[in-house]
Amino acid sequence: MDLSWLIVVIVLVLGVVVGNITLLKYSAKFKFPTPTKPSDHPDGTSNADKQMKKKNGFDDEEDW
Image 1: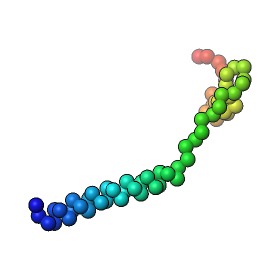
Image 2: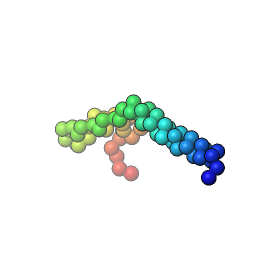
Image 3: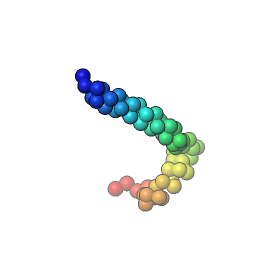
Image 4: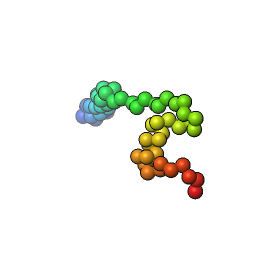
């Protein structure tokens, strides 16, 4: 195997390894949203559910 091909392969492997390490460091800064807790409403919907319905324009409970 030619020396130049060996150098190219080594550089590519090191690039993948360094890229994955930097991606892990970058993704560690993200915070995942916490799931909402079920509430004690009699209809089974929480305040977050009601706010989401109003946000999306589906605040009425009528069936089609």
